[in-house]
Structures are given as structure tokens and as C-alpha cells.
Length: 212
Image 1 (cartoon, rainbow, N blue to C red):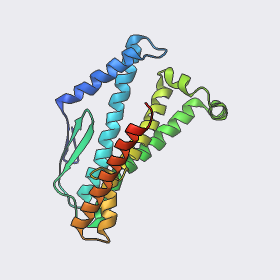
Image 2: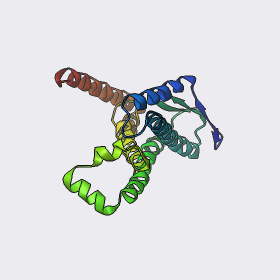
Image 3: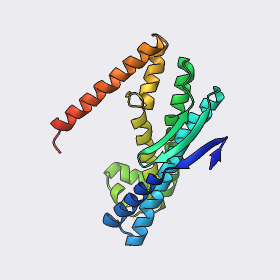
């Protein structure tokens, strides 16, 4: 598959995440049959990775507008990677290119969310919001509405995770582009890296302190 001259490739190891999805469907199936649950989880995983590709295309297509060559996009079990020939050292250009990915996920979350609300119906939705009940039962049904809800939540999580200010995640690059407007580029990169390392230490510490 090629989009605007950008090859979209799937690494052979991507089959591992598909196999995991099938296993998850088989071991934790809801109200569906075993085959139906496996099909649901595999479909959900594939659609989620379509969203990942769109995220990377958001970066890539905007990068092309700034004259940056995009070698390819590759899907791995842990996500997608867009290989850019270089990242512009102009802070505004880097900021716009970086922000495009999470913005795509937020737009997708909005679209899936609107579709999910339409499928649930306003009266049922108000009841679920008022009582806090019915959400897990709805997702456990493993139908089209559950798929829309899961894709809504996962796109929100993708956007939130990528905005964590840990270089080289999108959030770290956004932080660097902001700092680069005030500091030399190398200094801004070093500062963004230190913030990411500090955040990693905090998360590791929390992992030891929090029960479970």
C-alpha cells in the first residue's frame, strides 16, 4: 500500500499481535461464541492499527508539506513508525508535524464517539451515565456498538500516551519545539530528553510503591 508516495509496510512480527488478539478473544470471550469472540478481538486489533497508520500518516503528510521526505511507514506489534528523512529545525514546523499525529487520533475518537452515541441512543446513554451501569455489559456484548466504544477509548488513549512529554514520543518533540523557540536546538533537545528520563524514573518509582 502506498499513500502519496509513502509505502506502508507491515513487519512479519506484526502477526504476533494478531495471534495475541485471537488468544485474548478465546480466553476472555464475552457473550459471543469462541469463534465470534476471536473474530471480534482480531477485527478490533486490526482497526486499531488502521488508526495507528492514520496517526503516522498525519505526521507524514504534514511533513511533506514542509518539504520533508518520508521514507516509509512500518507497522510493528508495538505500534507504527514513520521514517522521516529529517525533522525540520524550525520550531514551528516541528510542532505542527508532531501535533498532527495526536490530532488525528482525537478526530477519530470524536467520530467513533458520535457513532457510538447514535448507536446506543440518547435515552439509554443518559440512563447509563446516571447509574454508572451497563457499560461493561455493553462492551461484553462484543457487537458493533462495543467496537465503536472501544475504538473511541483507544484513540483517546493513543493521543494521551503520545502527548506524554517523554522524548522521542510526540509529547517530547512538542516540548522540544517549544523550548527550541527559546533556546539553542541542541540545548532544547537535551532538556526534553532530561524531562523524559525524569518522568521514566518517576514511573518506575510508582511501579514499586503502588500496590499490585
